Amino acid sequence: MKPFLERLALPDGASWATLNRRLDGEIPFQWHHHPEFELTLTLNSRGQRFIGDHIGSYDDGDLVLVGPNLPHSWCSAAKVEEAAPHVALVMWFLPQWTAPLGSVFTELRAVAAMLARAKTGLKFSGAAAAGARPLIEALFALPPDERLIQLLHVLARLARDADAVPLASPLAVADDRPMDRGRIDRVLDHVHRHFAERLTLDGLADIAALSPSGLHRLFLRHTGQSVMGYLERLRIGAACALLSGGTRPIAMIADEVGYDSLANFNRQFKAQRGVTPRQYRQRFRMDG
Image 1 (cartoon, one colour):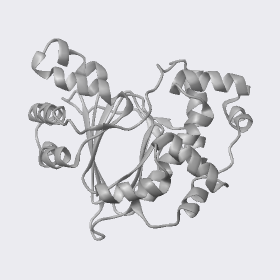
Image 2 (cartoon, rainbow, N blue to C red):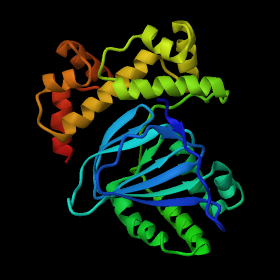
Image 3 (cartoon, rainbow, N blue to C red):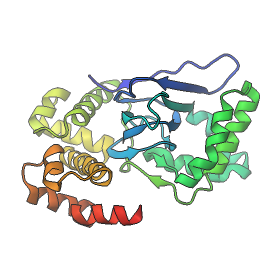
Image 4 (cartoon, rainbow, N blue to C red):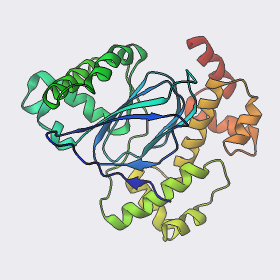
């Protein structure tokens, strides 16, 4: 199943959309993309977030801005308070809606610059997310005109977050041909769902209905990297989430993310992160 193109219906009297999503069971993995920016505040939930080729852990109060047509999903593992639901407060707005911000309203140039950086996704710092949280929670109860002003207030505040970090690799300019979009979506969905399994270029090319060389060119055009390079980033990203969030043995983590050889896992991890898995775990704990 490919990541679906989510089409959003705007409410009457509004130029952008919101969703107050509350789930008692879990936040399911739903790999999708859409032409809108998406600002999501996740509450009372812990799990993993998938943004392009990024995999990372999230916790209560996680605040992320996703750029247009960047595939993404959240997948919960547990609640913070078991009796309450998982909550996702979501705001969607079109690039066309934000285009005049930097050129017409010079006071909002920092917001325009932040939106440009969000092409690959942005995770805001804990302090910025905590400061924006009451504004976002209040936003959902406001009438449309005041809600718009509140959103601009939120974006202006977040644009001052010097500690916001990019999430995914820089993407190449996407080819908008529907056939190519469908092919790359099918492959990306399969890779994200099965990255820990043994995947081959020939097998992925069959999913795209292309030759291996055709898939290689298509993948480079859409992601700026090779199929196997993207797969390695996913595996190491998943390993980082496991290393930072638990105490499982490193050899077990290597196996869980798709490496038969611990030596190869250590080599790939150090090539991408600059440290060994053991050093990463120790550094993460010291930073925490």
